[in-house]
Amino acid sequence: MPQPGPIFVVDLFPKLDSRLIELLRSLFPSDWERQTIAPLWRVKDVAAHLLDTNLRRLSIVRDRFFGEKPDNADSYDGLVAFLNGLNADWVKAFRRVSPPVLVDLLEHSGGQVNDMYRRLDPYAEAALPVAWAGEECSFNWFELAREYTERWHHQQQIRLAVNKPGIMERELYFPVLDTFMRALPFRYKSVDAEKGALIKFRITGDAGGAWFLVRSDGKWELVSEPVGRAASAVEFSQDIAWKIFTKGIAQEAARPQITITGDRELGLHILNVIAVMA
Image 1 (spheres, rainbow, N blue to C red):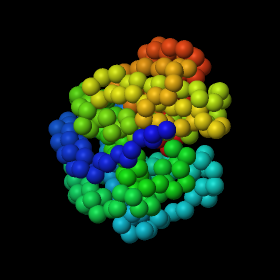
Image 2: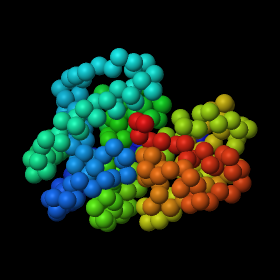
Image 3: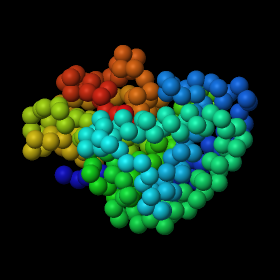
């Protein structure tokens, strides 16, 4: 069965960063204190997290410096707890830094990170695996696609909080959705079905598309073309798609906005598909 191809996003990072810096420089002082859909973070906290990500990427990928090592990284939950602690420590420290300083640091570090990404072999092994997809080692192209979704969805959180238009054009949003959907096989692993069962996922909107998950030899596989008739067909809009995959919407709120044809239980498991480390 044909598998989905790689996702190349290197040329999109500068475009996304440019939009971020333009956005942050347009904010009023009160905007920085607005609450985002991330329960513990305001706008300034999210921006600080993005800076932390830039600096950690340079340290890990360029310098092979990993800093603190987790005490309980042998489990997924342990790794998530460790990362949450790192994120919280950084955000708390940066509450003493002014927004102009933060923006300058973001702009400077972002350019260095993007230059580094251009030099990476997309098919070489990444410094870190995409753990939310169940991988123990990943190619650079996938790890960069994962990082792109991080930058995109955190900027989207800021835009939503300050009532600015989201970045929903296909060029910049479709790669996010395509990357998120690579979490399907791992997140569906606990769901049983007959061999050959097919689930079709359709995201509506200009940046949307269709993805197919098939049950084969006791596991789920993401395929690029449908094989047989779908046991379940799931449809939802691009407006809520990113929120579902990043825990930005409660399941109770998302459920009425999802249309399912066929096996409802198979389809509703999409609400458990998370494409962030959470």
